[in-house]
Length: 366
Image (cartoon, rainbow, N blue to C red; front, side):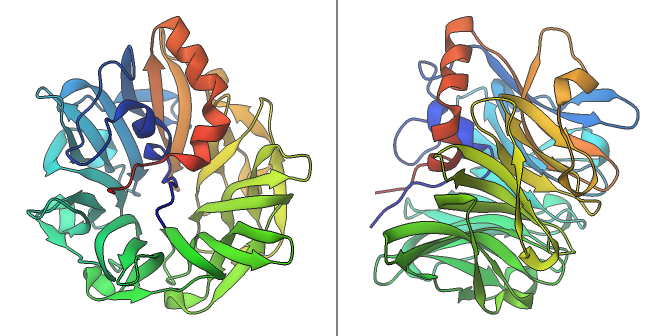
C-alpha cells in the first residue's frame, strides 16, 4: 500500500508544485509567483534571503548551529536540486538533482534523489555537503531520508520487500539501515532524531475503533516504539525532537481540528499549542523548547512552547509573507519560507493548508 505523507515543508509546497512522478520537475501551472527561503534571526531581527540555484523557487528544510541550511531549489532548467549553504546561510552549493531535508552540525546533509534505476533513494553526504552516498533500502524499490543527528545517524522511511513502508534508522555516518517496525499497523515513517538516537515520526496502528495513525517516539538508537497518542482525535504526526526528548508535531483534536502540539521530556504528555487560524502544525524545536511551525502564517513560541506568535509581527520583510517556519537552532535562527504569489493562489494555499500540511509532503513513486 502506498500512502502519502509529509516531511516538513515539502511536506507542504512540493505537493502543490511538483508534477507527478520522478524527475522533480517544477510545474509552472501549479504555483504562481515566487517562493523564497530565509533565515530570520530572532535576536538581531535580521533576515537573510538564501537565494536560489537559478529558478524562482527555494524550499529550505533544516538548519544547524552554524546557520548552514539544507533544502531544495529550482534550477534555471526547472529542476529541483538539493542544496547546502555556508554558515549563516551564505552561499548555496548545488548537491545535484534531489531534495535536501536534514543537516547536522558537521554539515552532513540527508535527503533523497533519483538513482540510475529511476527510483528515489535516501542519501547522506560527507561533511559540508561533500559527495552523495546512496543509503539503499529495506528491500523494496525506494527510500526517503528526513532527519540526521551529529553522529550521522539518518532516519526516514523505505519500502520493504513485502511492499510496506517502514521507518528506519542507520548507524553512524549512514552505515546500515535498521527497520524500526510499526505500532501494529502496516506502515511507519520517521522524521526526526536527536543526539541520543531517539526517533520520532508516525505509524499506522490497529485499534478497536479501527486503523489510525499516531505519532511515536523511540528509545535511544531507535530501540522500541512508543505511541504518543493524540489530542483526542484519530490522527497525529511527530515532526521534530530536541535532546531532552520534547516532541512537536500535529494532531487532530476531539472536534476534528488540526492543532500543533508539544510534549514533555521523552515524549511524556501532549500539550495543545492552540491555533490562531483554522489549523496549526509544529515542525521544529530547539533546546529551549522554542517551537516553530505554521498557523495561517509562520509562528514561533517561547520556551517550552508557551505562546504562539506570528513571525511576521516580530520581523517584517516588505512584500513578503512568512508562511511556514520549518526549523530553529539554539541561537534563535529560524528557517522560514515566504511567498509572493498571485492573490488567488495565496488564498487557495491558505485554504488548503490544513489538508496539505500532513497529507502531501511528497509524492511517492508508483
